[in-house]
Length: 141
Image 1 (tube, rainbow, N blue to C red):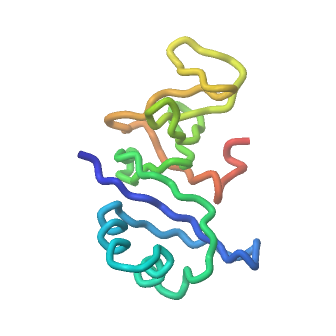
Image 2 (cartoon, rainbow, N blue to C red):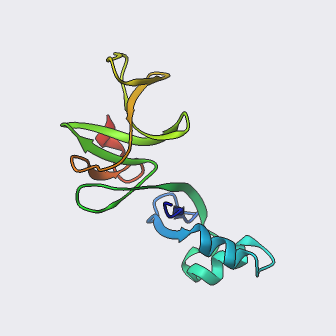
């Protein structure tokens, strides 16, 4: 069974130019810690300390349970390169997909709106993480 974990991206709401803080937590840690506190913000403060106090969540990305060819964990909203193309990891139609925005439909690819893609599965020995949509938004343009 895959480990369920999340990547949180946090930023100071008073400063849009402030550095984005990235924190990771497993479902097990979340459930065990949150059950023994009165509220979630108290748990987050105890878990991550003062550096996230009063920060806003920019994103909550789910771990796919898979790693790229460099053994780096792949999360939702990561940008990956495969076969000389860049894809965004999205959760669509019940599966994690490598999606690319495109008007063309190719045989063998799943079509979702104006996005097309392939299901992310098994060994990803040709897949490399290049960044994510928050730090590297220009990669997909």
